[in-house]
Image (cartoon, rainbow, N blue to C red; front, side, top):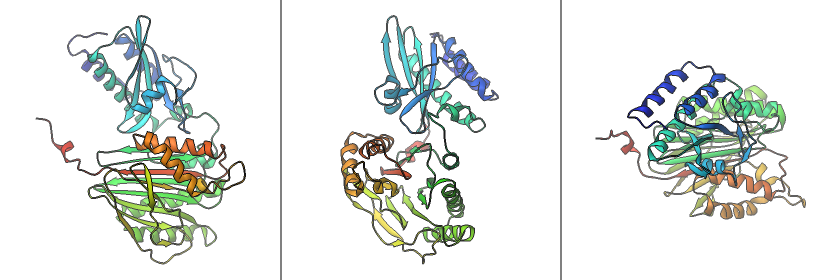
Length: 402
């Protein structure tokens, strides 16, 4: 690799300038070309599939094709899950696996081979991987190529609608982290989730629309749209519920409804408020144990026309995790015909949690473990949404280095 003074800065600047107006189909050749300029070869970009089980190669001129790799048990998967560079020495070379992170959102992994590597090379490659992730996210807004590459099987129309609604499924800040997952990834219809961090308030919602197929997806779409509209108008939780309830009733009539869990978390103080509209109560996890459920006062499902809901509240401790989920998770029947149930869910959480350093790892491992526990059965949508309050302040991030 060229180690002349300023080479790395020139390379990154050149890549950024060229990528600015580059059409999506030329991103892969551009990345491969720039990596060859630093002595790299055999470049591969792998993206996480929708089910969060596999890393799928992105096809493109200049990139090395290969087979999909499992998240569990592969070097690329280790880099992705740990969010750190993994190096694999080979005869006369080193294979590098670099996580592609857009902020805290996990995009995939870039791998390449170098003859040798030192700390300067690692710093440059980390910055290069961040730039590649940013390019993929930016171009993803106006191409289908990256979405198509992530698919391991055909996607239903309802699932297509739901995935287009979702925010990034992971977000991490010094004070709070969230992660979500939806099953079945390629056929989900009525489940959805949404969140937004506005100043010190994290707004969250988990939605489970009645029915299956396209009707459920349309119902969930209207609900998410109404939720966002009310949230962006600074509506409180009670007003937010009323707005969503009116929107569903006006559009679909009294025979259609959805359950919902709507929350507000002050990330500075850890004060959590929520409205439960017919949804399973979230679970409070502390020190890897489920210490209880957030029951509180409930109200009728959205669209049925409940009275003004009472706001429930709870003071969290730093490190507390709150798990919201839809009823498809516990109402599914196992192979023997027995309902999966809340007790098995709690036991699975306490078995998986100690090995999960991040919310992303926990929600992914929990979802996949639960799927195995249910014998691979998913006849209804099943969604998990995990929140971790870390406490503290992020003020130091706004101070420039002196």
